[in-house]
Length: 264
Image (cartoon, rainbow, N blue to C red; front, side, top):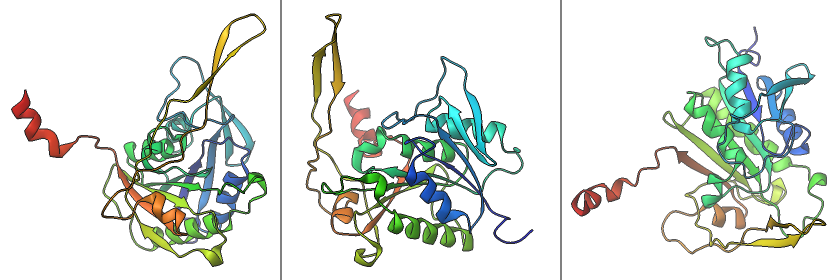
């Protein structure tokens, strides 16, 4: 077995199995490892870290080593792929979720299906990366975008991991956001912290033909709070850097433990 085939990568996304960004990710990583892809049948943006518990799920083989999960979330895809496709003694070396069509920065990662695919992987003990492509306001034809910088960036990171070790401890993953620029315009990698978005509650109310009210959740606010210290993912991407943020699953506010003990 050659060096490339000795490594295995499991890929998922939250934009659906036919996303051009998913296909770009597969193309970028094919020279580095054996690839198995399990992706949702439909777009699952903002589904968060959700498992489907109320209905059965079915693998549909699109081509060898490429499946859609009808109708699952990215978390379902990783959970069931590890259960069904892989031998428990030979799990993938790495899970990559993406390339998401749109950024996943700041607290948005709590909504993100892309980040949740990586989150499920590290819960199962497998190193993971979530990767997302930011778009500027003037990029109307997202499907026509070539994802070249994202492809180059993820290939560089995976090569570095395979040549050494994954840089984070267990139950942590890398959240990567790609700026809306071509490779020659990129300023390189920047290690960042998560930004802080100014959230609003935007939902449009409508009446259907039967006179029933329904709601359509609107676009999120694009404003971000100013922060001090380490550069944020938002600032990095805005300034042409590929943002790499370490994310951990321990959501405890450790600095408040002592104060809370005194309060209670």
